[in-house]
Image (tube, rainbow, N blue to C red; front, side):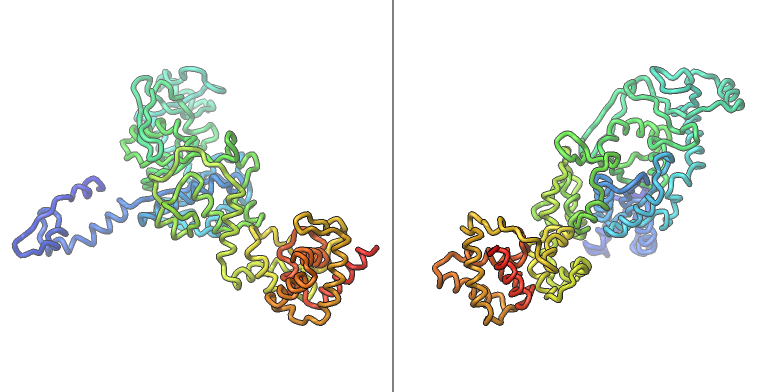
Length: 513
């Protein structure tokens, strides 16, 4: 059907037709007939010729960054050209399956906005979409592949070295062993001569000698298929046009193509992705407990920042790095996928997350932080607190440490008053606080940052001191911390006059002892 339709490429013109009308007609059709069949043509074209990608995770734990990147690229490739994005659960490795992992996959896809068009809970007519529910299908096609000479029964125990002796069994011997119930697998039959080649959109043309390919297991002794067989059957039956997966499958792809060829099936477009490494030599791995999407969320990273960042792990945009999901759909280009491994840089993600936080409106940011303010028992200006935090915060998990002085300052530590750049020490800090305490009693514009800043600056100028000689001691007195989300002005604003005076008084007492 696809080949037939794709051949409609020659156009005609009649005397009664305009240029634009003639360009819209296939060879041999009158205008009336064309307008009748055009809706049908479009329907068939959309069904059989549109891009279809699949994300096929195994429910073996949390979704690590490499998995999520594959899902994202599958989604972007499909949606960039108006195609379909399919979710398929590959649960054939029953021993490694983790309870609740499938629900977690659904949750992540929903939360990140990677909405699939078909999946276990969205039937598109080519299901089931969970491999453990497709066992009869795999067995049917395994039998067909045996008949076509592309697979054979193997009754050997353990790993094979060299040629599989079972390939030479007669049909009678095979049937006899099957009747006896001897444990067996179904192996792929690989030609001993010739080559198998394919073209990958990232790595180019790849060709291998067939004799270098091992005859891997297609159906295990427990009746479950291996990935090497199930992915081919499923991709064909689900009309997958573009297969997106890690480059660790490059070496196995010739074996998959031999199966496609045995069935005389159309081979999909291959897009193999470079690995995501945690350093120059080590890949990120779910088994090794490396970063997962859930971990990053717990650490206070926004889903938008996570998606944006992992999109750049192996792909380069035209210019801007800060891209929404809609931006990514519009800009994503397979040609810009790199062959080189990508390094997961947590500092880069932290920077990007900070950009997303700062790009929010103050109202949005404040709403996001309200749950983190539940521990605050003092009556303070929370909106002002959010205003102070927004330009400084990089991830939400830092909020707790940033606000831990509000209920009560940290325990007194005289050493914090020593600051080389500000030229302060406990002795001159005490002098500064006594001076501030005397003057600030009559100052009542604590909610006016400009006025309060002028108060401190003018006081320092009057005494012929650097601003830091006044402001640093006040900042320390209000928090007993060397790192704070704002300076003396912002913190005094948040705490209010009464609490500011109380803490300055206590700091004076502590420094005098």
